[in-house]
Amino acid sequence: MELDSAVSGAALGGVAMAGSDVGLLDGLCSTRAIRRYTDEAIPDAALRDMLFAATRAPSGSNRQPFRFVVLRDGAKAAQAKTLIGESAKGIWDAKRRNDGYDRGSGANTRSPKARMARTMQRYVDTIESAPVLVLPCLVRYRDPDPMEGASVYPAVQNLMLAARALGYGGVITGFHRPVEARLKTLLGIPSEVFVACTVTLGRPEGGHGPVRRRPMGELVFGDSWNEAPDWAVDPPGTQHTSAGPPKSDRTT
Amino acid sequence: MELDSAVSGAALGGVAMAGSDVGLLDGLCSTRAIRRYTDEAIPDAALRDMLFAATRAPSGSNRQPFRFVVLRDGAKAAQAKTLIGESAKGIWDAKRRNDGYDRGSGANTRSPKARMARTMQRYVDTIESAPVLVLPCLVRYRDPDPMEGASVYPAVQNLMLAARALGYGGVITGFHRPVEARLKTLLGIPSEVFVACTVTLGRPEGGHGPVRRRPMGELVFGDSWNEAPDWAVDPPGTQHTSAGPPKSDRTT
Image (tube, rainbow over all chains, first blue to last red; front, side):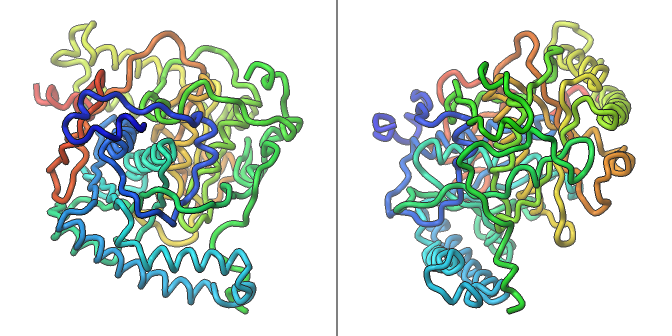
């Protein structure tokens, strides 16, 4: 990775992909949302590898309808980041209120809920200065369909995993949604294109916890819904969490 | 992997995940659709690792609305496989005609198109006997939304990549769609649940080609739509293909 970082632009056509220090299966289980980044820019070589991996993902009939708009430090990129930043702050303000992040255990500054609120507040306050924003898009060839996401979100997941492989991290958000029309005008994205999400990417700052999900026995079934097969047991050391925002405090 | 395969069922709670022979970045770029399987069953330990990796994927607000119905050799699984198999044959018959797989270069049995048609024909003819079928589902908590796929297809992609890590392979299909209502009745899947796709999994039989996609410069843009940054160049040795089914022969 260090050697390749010195090569940039079109010269990368002669440069092989970086090797991985992380194994495939381990990487799948240890990639988590990263919302705090250092100021470090992402070099061309790392971006190339990440976006190459993203575009190798599967899609229906291998049509490859996914496109990735990569926003770094161009003039339009700066404007797009500002639009998304304003939108992000509005969305988080509403969510913080509605999901009760400052009530119940959220009033205790050392609670997981209060920590999450601080991380989110900083994230939306500084999202314009995240090193890279990516807008993964889907070029529709037929009317919107519930399964169309199968042709863009696997590529988004490849992007997140490739970032992890190279020592970066990111998170998938919907912060572009209130400003999608303005972004399309700004960046020349055709109106029929679906902007599937907004991804921020950067070098993780400080420490972060492990991936936390529900026990797999709540998510994996056999011949009947809600009945887990006996083999659906988490490996030793698995960290759990309940699902979603802090709903239990919503009505307090 | 070999040692773990001897452990099955609930005893897997004491067994760590398998190690990977494949690096993370390399795995992302070398996982392709696998449609030909040996008769080999997939042991509990491998299935546990694959489904564990799938359920560690990200989702909106970490709500984890994904569920995986794993069909092996139970009585209902056999019925579900039969339903999906009949549906698959009908869908492929229509596609073979409409996309002109037997016209143009498809008339040459050695053409890529004819090879693809043979692989697909065998795939749908034998899909009932694929070692495992998985129905990844999305439990909706609000009305259908174009971004909801961001909470299930990353998990599906993790499943495909985990299969690759363990020496298995599979493909994402929509073959359940015409029989979705009957499958829900059979398997007790609540009516409001979205069955996001059907995945087949097994040990790859014989050789298969590399991942082929469009050059990344056609898929990755900078500040403006359809304008690739200079660093968006494929690494040496990349194999390409045009997008989608053989459209060029459709009107011949």
